[in-house]
Length: 451
Image (tube, rainbow, N blue to C red; front, side, top):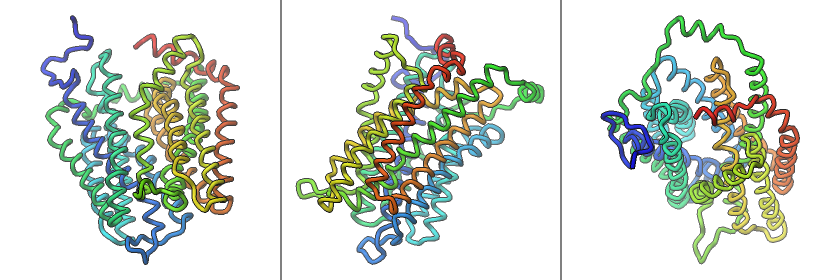
């Protein structure tokens, strides 16, 4: 039986894929372990009383969410210069190496117990994620030649590495940080990043020719800069701008996870289970767990919908994802109502909320990046990708702003408001779906035919 993928002479493979895929898989796994380990502790560390056995900074919820919002926004915005430096100066491979070094330093600095070291550590992490995150994903694509049927499965394997790291991080870093010492938890995140960096360093022999700096001739640069947008490309840019708004809305609601919902789990949730108090940070692992267990199921549903000739366009999936994710906040409203009557809320409300948030993410997130690459004009491909990360960053900042206002508006009203807004916004997008698809001029259909 003939192999269904393209054989590259001299290529070392593992499970039928380039060995370099697994170098990047484990590098990203440990990078996400370090990032989500620190993220799980971020706000609850800041609000921990200075006089407690495991002292934090003693900040208010609003102060902690304010810093969390700026931090998560800058992490995404840093991807723009990180991508530009890789494209124009260093190449993706070297930029990932530099980003990993900065991350090791950043997480290591957080292990020291001082307010100054916390700020410095966060700054290094912002720069490190900006250098590593956008470029390592591009390197995965560079492992496969054009037309290689293994590419999609390769990205799926890589995606599972991301979520495995995100699942393990809160369980280990969160437990160590909450139970023993916050800075031990941050230090464990640093150890994870160091393992990832060592993996990447010694795996360079499997990444030869991948992620190298590509230089365009002066003529090629000039031709690309003078190329004018066609009417079709202009229409597609209009759809892109609307999709960026959808991305901001989605992450503005979804990223309550690391902020307001993390604090709610710590301060207002009964976390006792058979005599054991579940660390608040462990709830941060639910999203990754549900992704790992439900990704194939949700993807299969959309495939069946499409096979029956029903609506399954990317922008429709994103709109549906926003509404499903928003529905998760209805459970948080029930949690807040229970807290008003009982003085605590049951943890099953959090589990149900994260379940619906994850299903919404599986509808919206995997297709959003692909959709943007299909619509972006060649001349502005890099800019549009940068705007995607910028939109994600603004969504994170919006999430923190909403969380900050929960102190004045009340959590019940805040969760209800998110649910109502996401539902109405999703319905509005579906209502104007036909004109949006006309403006895209069959970009998705053309991409499917040429693959």
